[in-house]
Image (tube, rainbow, N blue to C red; front, side, top):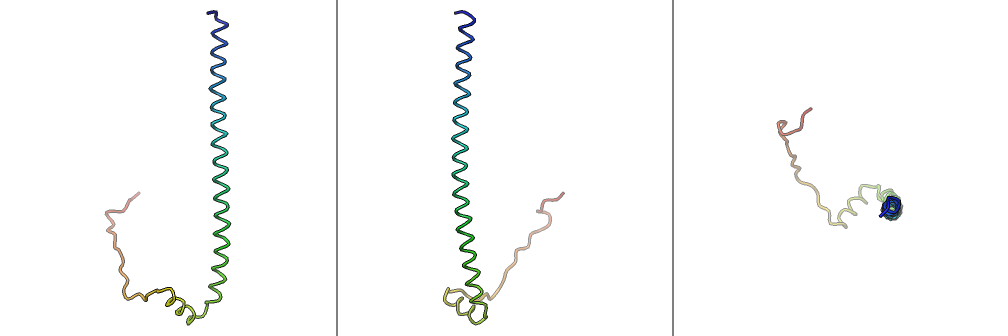
Length: 94
């Protein structure tokens, strides 16, 4: 084989590898864009739910309404609160 033919084959192989990498990057880019669009839809949905919940809270601003709502949701009053105490020797220090 002549040097020119070897150079041509190597150049074609390198071009094919680069083209494959480019296609792979475009595929990843598109999948990230699709994920980003889905996340944006989720953010919009949660924002709308948040607005709805804020409106519900304003309608339940009265303490008696809140206790009635808590009973409807089967909430229970807290009788005792236990706190965890973490020894200082187990904490990370600078």
